[in-house]
Image (cartoon, rainbow, N blue to C red; front, side, top):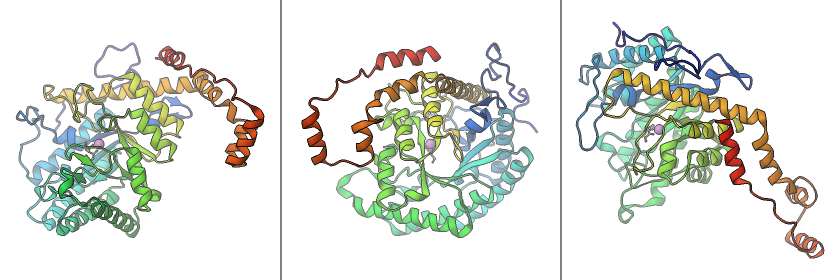
Length: 436
Ligand code: XUL
Ligand code: CO
């Protein structure tokens, strides 16, 4: 059985190719800064949008045509869907995938039944991983779709719901470990509030921290030593989510002694909903040594919600890859396509167009960022800007040799500061266009 009979492995054909189902820039074996493109980008396909997304929106019914899916919640359909997913990922040539527990297996009537369903699908996931060599980038638990989580999961006002979320997370972690997952993600979809009048914020945040500490302990107990990621998002579905942006996550993790165990998984459309650029979020995480992984997508700046579109903007992918290279590259994380085709793009083949195009956009961003770094003009403009810190007073301050008293004496003696150098913003922006 094949779900995509007309598609074979997507080839690399080079920039001259006019084949819409070929890579023009993503050559997985090409070396960039001493590493293959495959190892730099660590592309990952998401199970939820690509294999469970049906194209519905708050105003309209599903539109997606998925001939392999019988539309039921049966285990047989779930297990069959795994074979289709791996056929897709293999033909695309992505080395990784990512899932929520409830994406891959149906929720049962009880926790025990849900766990058993998950085990039954994990069997097939394992077989397909072995057959294809495709690996799990990260797993996660869906703690936001079921009505029980209407008030949140780890931040629910209902202690039994908190306990249920712990039980579900325990199982999702174990399954991620069993499948050799390279990490585990926490996205707190409903861990926030709709109304402050009915919310005990301090208590909710303490509960969230307790939940995460229990997850850390359980990972240790089962020997899962891969990183945990927190994925910031400011809102949607809640009015405000506690992990609202990279800085808020870092502060929360630090306040509750969780920082040693977590890195950040940053998503472009979440950054823009928070009023930031993805570059800002990457720099905040990178500067704190907490840049872990990215959910690669983009929003529409004219829409105020999470549209999860495939990123094709080279300026965006260049900025992403430049920050990623600057902070040492993706090691355990990856470029994970948390993106969905538009509901008007309902054909199965649109899934290929979307992924091929965005993989190429990130590959091109990587090549451009590496060329910028090899050339060095941007880096030298930045280091010139801070040159006054390299010697004399600046170096002494950085070394901790000064106080307000000594700096007051120094400036009384020295007089007015040396004139500022230009920020050269326009020159730098022109320079970046040179590489594109
Ligand atoms: C939702 C979102 C999630 C997380 C995983 O906006 O990004 O799909 O990536 O739960
Ligand atoms: Co995401």
